[in-house]
Image 1: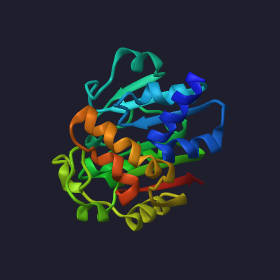
Image 2 (image 1 turned 45 degrees about the vertical axis):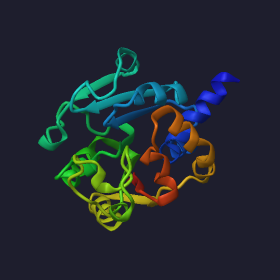
Image 3 (image 1 turned 90 degrees about the vertical axis):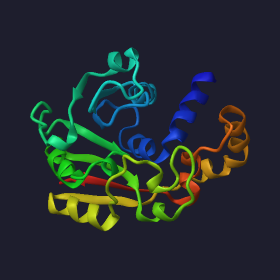
Length: 222
């Protein structure tokens, strides 16, 4: 029961990202490349998908990792994305590439995406998530609710731009739009007092689904 609850809580933390992988692969083995693998992503992903061959990529090993994350990874690529040097990553190798809340930190995020597409197998899936233009109109909050709350955000991307980028490389968008999860929204009345007790203030990401902070695209390689 404890493991079941933990699994559900992890999925709730990133429902759009995890649910599409569950629907596609279930408990079957698959290879995943996680771009920006910090915040204990290896631990969370391998807990939900124990048969997943997890590969992580990040600029450094310092973004909220611990040693168990690296133990769980089949491979870790320490790469600065802006260099566009991905020769260390095999082509036609991955079933899934996840790139969640990374491109808004990159001036050349479009070129990074194009350079990563060859790493997908035929039929492979690319999951992309980022703050949408509407996030520039939201109130400021700790943890980021307004795009400009984070000084490392350097570029605003759009669904139209991402769709056209994928299409130009033979990647067909199969789903996309504003990320919303009604369960996360319904839990807000319980979450808000817990955040105030723990942190003394509200946390911006708790309101992302309610406000529609993030956009996402799921695309398949032909």
